[in-house]
Structure formats: structure tokens, C-alpha cells
Length: 392
Image 1: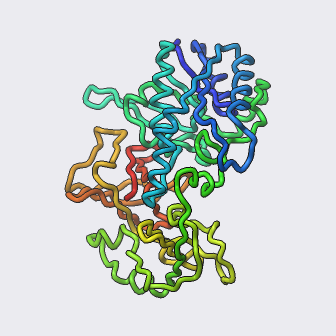
Image 2 (image 1 turned 90 degrees about the vertical axis):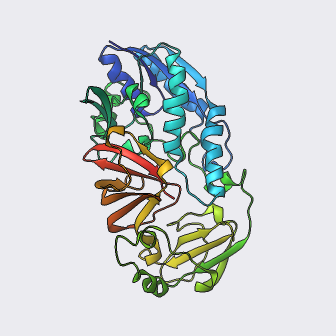
Image 3 (image 1 turned 135 degrees about the vertical axis):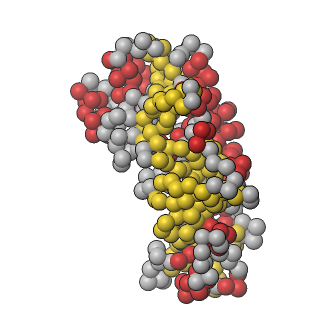
């Protein structure tokens, strides 16, 4: 059997992953990551890393496997948190969980695991891995988890073949209730523990307070764009060849709408956001439909069906395209249909990827709500995640 380092987080999923691997006869070592020490902006004081580490150590003792702690906080701050701040500063909305998996769990943490002469690193992700041989080369496939409600393949959409070759996902074939049941049957300390929420390894935070560590508040105008104005503009979007009008949000101008309030910084807001505007007196709630960090303006629309929230497509710069399946990489001039996801737990949507000289255009069969710059678009064939890219 293989020597496996399992990333024990103090949660039920990684605990059951460790139990399953032990039952399979693998030589196991438990390794707990400390990635964040600060509590600035924390909504709750619960679930500090010290508590998580204690629970993880209890699980390791219960399973009779060696337990170690590694502090990766310097790398995490540099490669995940600083990236977050920079993206928000630029008016984009990053996904720290995707970055955490690419930069920490399957990079820095993987390096630490290899110091134990491990063959594999195991996590509690709800996804699966398979292998096929293409033209004599072994290809590692990243597949959706069996539990469609918990599938976490999207969070691993930036992994490469080398990282996948070292990965194991023991709970990927299970449903979440089955994982809980195994934990109860084995009397694991995490059996009834709640799932973690919020930013990967930081926890549940008040995002504006968290971001104010590096981003200064700056008063600006909130401008409402009437739905009728947007409907008039949408009539211009006539064909798939009209890529820019299909894929980019309409370039709002201050004179297109009415100033209805103030905010404390456009970089604190994201498209589709409802909370935090603090503007009442409307029949329907207001939603952010666009931000301009240069002029420090937030554009809003009334109602969750405001046309400013919807777009037919999105754009990814060619250098931001990442192919897990390099053998399926497209060439300039090609177009190909995929199932596409633009956020975690969003249903897969039918769309066509058009590879052009100026970049890559994603055209959806149906308009998509809340396409957000800085997030990741991931594309699938069936259950297999093929690649991903950062939305411009």
C-alpha cells in the first residue's frame, strides 16, 4: 500500500477520509495546516485554528496515526490574502478557495507532505479522480463528486496534471449523509461538528472590515440605472459575432442614472451584491449591477431580475486559460461546446467557447446572472472538469 499524508482540518470530511484510507491499509500520516492567525473582521470567535488543531489531533489519536502541525501562514498571506486585496483594489472579485487549493493545499502543503516521503496527499474534497491513457501518456482526470449537492471539483479547477497525480479524494464516492454516518459509527470527534464557512482558512468574516486592513474607505456615489435604459441597450445585442456586446457589461456612465446615495468604497462591492447598500424605500431590493473603482462609483438596479444583472457571455484572456486536460486544449479559430460553471454550486450551463486572436469568448445558451470579473469560469464534459479561466 501507499504512504499517504492526509490533510486533517478538524472537520468531518477529512476525518472520514483518514478513516477510509486507514481501513484500506495505507501507511498514514496526519498533517494539520496553520494558514491564518489573525481574527480581524471575524464574525465569530469560534473555530480558531487552535481549536481545529486540537480536534484534528483527537481524530488522529482515535485512528492511531502520527500527527504533525505545519505553519504555512507566510505563504498563505503572500499567495492568497495579498492576491485577494490586490484583486478587490482593482475592482475584481477573487475566489480565495480556488487560489488556496492551487497555491497552498496542492503546492506548499504538497511540498511539506513530500518531506515525509509520501506517495500521495489526501483531502476531504467531494470530488473524484480517474486515469486514462491517451497516445501512450497517462492522463489524470478530475471528476465531480458523487454528491451533486456537495461537489467541490470547481474549487480544484486550477490544478495541473502533476498536482492531480499526487492527489487522493477518499470521500468523493460518498454522499455527505454517508460521511456523517461513518463518523458517528466510528465515534470520531468530528461526527457532529458543523462544516466550516467563509474564506478558506480565514473563516466567516465581515468582508468590508477584513478588506479595510489594506483598502481605505472612500466615499463615493451610488447611481441607479433604470431597467428601461438597459432594455433599450440590450436590443443592440443581435448575434454571437457581436462578442463584446454579448460578453462585457454595458459601460455605464454617471449621466445614465440618478445618484440615490453614498458608499464607502467601490472596491468593497461586487456584481449581484444586495446587502450593504443601506438604501431603503424601494418596492424591490437594490442590487449592484456594476462598479467603477477608478471613479469610485457603484451602479445599482432595482429588482433581482434587473437586466443589468444578466449577460449572454464572458471573456477570458488567453493567458488566463488553464487546461487540466492539456490534450483537449483548443486552438485559435476553434469553437467547442461545453457545460460551464461560473461559481460554486451553480448548475452547469450549456455554452460555446470561441477561441479568437484577441482572447477566448464564452457564449451561453441562456443569459447568466451575476457574471463577475475575477471569478473563475470552469468547463466540463459530463462529470469531468476540463479547464478554467479567470473572468475579465
